[in-house]
Length: 435
Image (cartoon, rainbow, N blue to C red; front, side, top):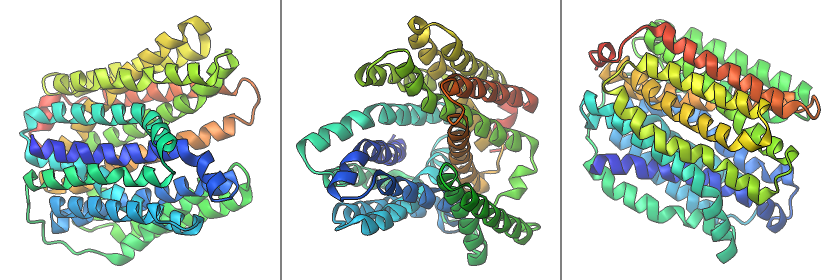
């Protein structure tokens, strides 16, 4: 249980920090005397650091030991939090947020991989369910916690609030399996190409709404980086981009399903506040209604995790994707009085999908490639959320029907995630043998 607490506390740290800062963006803009668009750079910098470091964190974990790199990531996150709290201006804060993202990447990439090392296969689904519960509760409470801290202290208190959680996580990390790592070559050039590709990808997404030409150039530069990376990594026994794992149909389809599901989630969560506003709800009523989604995930994910240890993960994921699709489509088409039910249905579907899909993904990879599997799983999540945000940005340029259109697209993607899961055709027990 100590190992589980170490992972879950660190995961809550990463989620709470991101959620609390989103609430503080208007305050940051005012206190630092910068435009709102500049304040958002603190979010973009964190996302860039996160996505650039997920795959390298997995590779470093396999080379030097998962626990060692996990502890290093939590420690780096803590030091960057102190730097954020001491920031004299926006430039310092943005740089510190980038470093926070690097530390957070180690937590996201290696957390479930460490749970796989610490627990027997027949308990992994339940542990992943508890992880999903932790993320959902942290997501639900982060805005209120951030607002409470801002009411009692300055914005710097948001980053100092991370330190007690860091201390608990590092103390509990002593119970994680040590692991000696594997003999493999770390390729700095591959890591640089990975950072280039994902860095330009994030830049393209950030610039797309206001500077489409710059966004297109950044996307082209990112694509070149990815092409060069794949060419460099092809043929390696343990490549930075886990091409060896992606050759396995079960693993590949689990990654594809995850991307589709997170795209649907992002489209839903970005569109629903606008839909509720159109339906006449004030900000407080909107916020309270939106809490139904993460709370439904929190209730569903642990149950789904336990079921995934006993039943077919493909059927559970298909049911989850279908339920999420029904919730999103219902929100777009149903009268306002049913929106709350649709939000709950969406949360149940998302929770029912994620735990079994992640269990299937990890157990379809060899145990010595758990770090790479964790890095790619986290990358799939961030990629799906980013692509969903970009799709929402494009749709919101189409007028007042944009929220309903975005929800419809989200529903289609969620249903696609369920269909892709059925295409795996692999029962839960067969994947267990891969461990």
